[in-house]
Length: 136
Image (cartoon, rainbow, N blue to C red; front, side, top):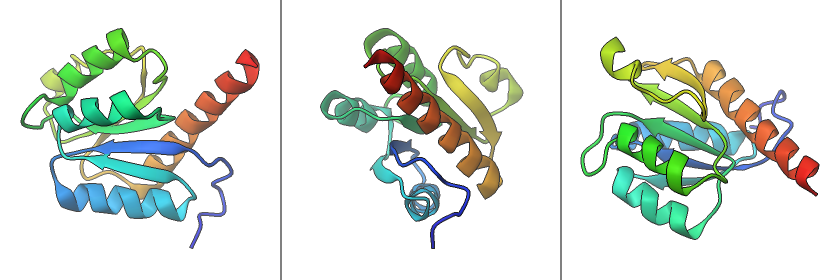
């Protein structure tokens, strides 16, 4: 069932080492009409980002093999087409405070509210589509 408040379709990459979290986020966002790809760590995300463009990345911070902070730094430098990121994390405030804010739409603490996630991803996708419209 599609969320009636979701009006923008987009492509989202979910990056989290917890398969249960990835599955939940995938199911919620697909029900909102989003196309969703998944990566189990930052290294897998880098590979996906090299092959496709995404309107939004939903990103966990603490992962093996290239954590979320490293991925955010790499995105800022190497993938300027990725405009917005939603951080989902159970990390400490000290770790969260190191998140670069330029491309981060919002930071959601695990366990996060599904409606907050939906709203944040919708803002990212709308921002991305609005940027495309202005550039054409």
